[in-house]
Length: 146
Image 1: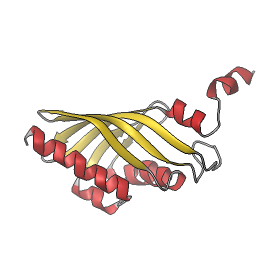
Image 2: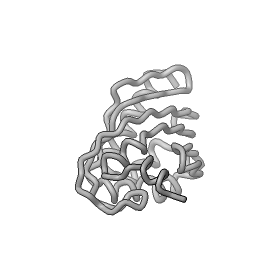
Image 3: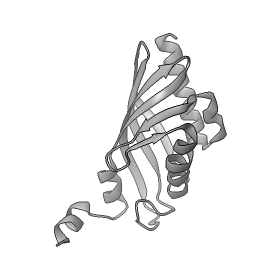
Image 4: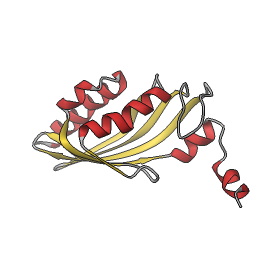
């Protein structure tokens, strides 16, 4: 696949993410895909695991979730992007009850494209900033523990 077609694949996948269309992801991801999550999340194997363990909980916590890339780059079988996620904290996230607060969080992704679909995704997501924006102070909590 060309770099442009791989970029287009990612753009269409983001449309499905923003629409919270969980079924559409079959069009973009291999069933045996691997999501390499940010620190604390680990790897999730398989499209069903990704949808159920990553997307559904995040959509429940941030139902107006929206991502927008600021930069996209493709080379060969690789696509990368960085941008911002926005939304309102309406459900529990990482043990924090809903606050209603607005969040704006930076992320970066790297995808490996195989046979026209995404097969792996390496994710860098600023969970520290997200937790601060919803009212947690991870550093203070760590200092208060014995």
